[in-house]
Image (cartoon, rainbow, N blue to C red; front, side):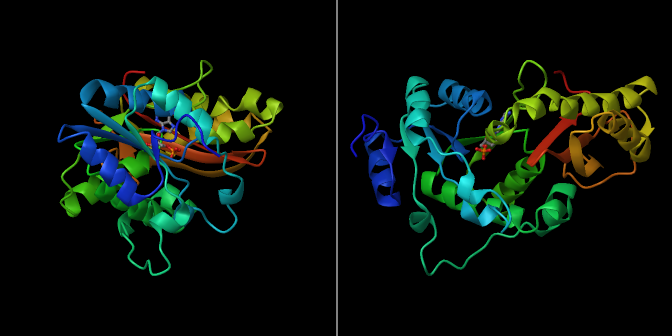
Length: 291
Ligand code: AMP
């Protein structure tokens, strides 16, 4: 069915490239997403709009980054509503390919950022970062942006992308933007829509627990062991019975997201993943960062 966004949305790589060519050789800002857009995504788009001549956003629910028991089939999809928001912010092209456009029957090449499979998030979702690295490399090759924008909300993903760009000599500048939160501290996420009302009420405990971990470090003159920090986080989470599975609480180098034993004034990234009811939530904070 025809829609008023048909000229904004490009479904194939050749159509995208044709449209891109008509816009000339100016700077291109790129915001890759899986759609179901919220203010977190839109903050990246606004930054891209401000700093580039042309803005491209992609909407693609990437099957290779979902595990067999994950939510690929029910991931929220709302292309027309997303297109309306992106048009309003002045996006020039939305690249929204289908699965067969991105992965032909002969597709075989994978980008494997092995070390990141050993991070807490990588261990929790085997194969996830290979899926992410492969699709982001493909999207960067299709779009060829000057600047690409990603959210700190997905901390390991930020490190993976910085590595891909440097290791594979991709001529794109990677820009990391702060996590956008609801007024009660819950990090915005497309998956928050899965939360039942009573789960949504207690979900801010995730951010609260991370802040308690940071406070332990601040209270001890910016010195703490990973063990002490994790214990503070757990203490807060333990008070909330609706948190039914803490998958990890991890204290990592904020450069590469690999675990560290103790944290000094240089700080760290404290991250966690848990299940609130059936919904998996992730969040992180970088110690000492202004928020
Ligand atoms: P996704 O659609 O979940 O793949 O996210 C697309 C991009 O938006 C990624 O770079 C995410 O890190 C970023 N993003 C998602 N949620 C937030 C948020 N709450 N704040 C800032 N960026 C976000």
